[in-house]
Length: 452
Image 1 (cartoon, rainbow, N blue to C red):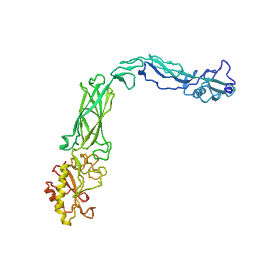
Image 2: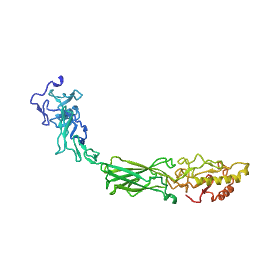
Image 3: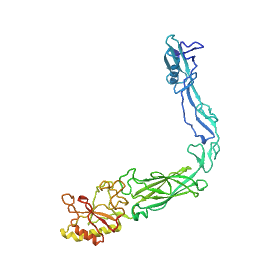
Image 4: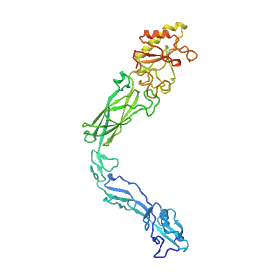
């Protein structure tokens, strides 16, 4: 440190304009280094934390991140008569020097910046830390919390550490129970009778297996993307609803267990088909095995793709790209459709040299049934409803009707409408009057006379 120790302030020092005694080696720079505990407080009877290192400017009383910061803080108060500050070495090693040179008088003052290791402070009344050998850690003796013993501390049987690992709490297990089987979309008379599912949660002590009364369990509902035949998804998709628990927000409920540890509730389907996720997790007390998930499939039972036939052809690809496949019916409905198509063929094939009439199938139902929200192609429809009229339970289908050739990409579609109407009536299906006009003109066949 040779050049920085020349012209040192004479013994006894001098006071600057602030009345601070400036004297060689009367200051030390400080580096404040906070580190996290190497072990958690409640896991050991001996609690150990990292020590704090600092450069301290003793006569100024502050702690600083580096020796340079300490020197600069000192330099700011010694007065304008000291025009320059030199710090060396620059790597903040123990023994670094701060040197300031007086402008008029020409002498310099300097001192050693010493690295100081201390233990972190504690709250009033707590046991203080003691610096361990080597200076890297500090330790103190702490008592085990209630329901814990030994050294290091271990929670008693039936208890686990809380999230902060400072106390032992009873250990609980959560189960989510769901009635077997699928349910159907709501919104129709037939669907409403089977559009709910009984479910429950139970909380018990992991050790004693005794039920926990008053446990708070959070239930969260969600609809899985691209299920039920819907290829679109957004936050407004209906999630379903619970009865028997308290609503917190959309799709979120709180349930409270009774004396038997159970909290029962009912999942209620919406008119939209799809797969729903029900997730249960303990709020209070904590459970070791949460969250617990379950799936609820909401679909119309018995829907199958319309079988291939030489007597009709499904319109494909569907102009509604959000619902690319709308050709699902129940088996008996498909049989009725084939009966009508065969009768129409028998009545018309000789009218045009054996040509098979082009019966085009438009919308029937989605693979899961329920709301067909064809908002890309249907008037007055929005995502998730209101929807395409009926078409919910695999018993209704639209048959493309003939429109003028200049507007129709298939001018021979349903060429002999009178014969088609006769064939439908012969099969016991009243086709009624055509719906809409132009390219939207079609017959809306209720294959069993029910508009669902």
